[in-house]
Length: 104
Image (spheres, rainbow, N blue to C red):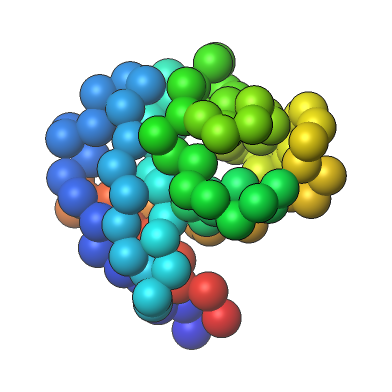
């Protein structure tokens, strides 16, 4: 059975905003893009640095260190210097609260 981690009120994240939360010891960035919520590991697969502070460009996050780009919706790498996708996590809204599925 999936363990869901309570994150924040869904209304607390405006379009284009994000929050970084701890999910079973891992930093996870939760984004609101057009009223839909997405969660990715807060780590650039290029060098292991955090990525959530990078610029959000549509549905892509740009790494603040070296410019690698990833799709927030799928975790897919879009541009070098990264070549590996970022892990994604299911997100749901339950009782007006965002919840992220813990990795199994």
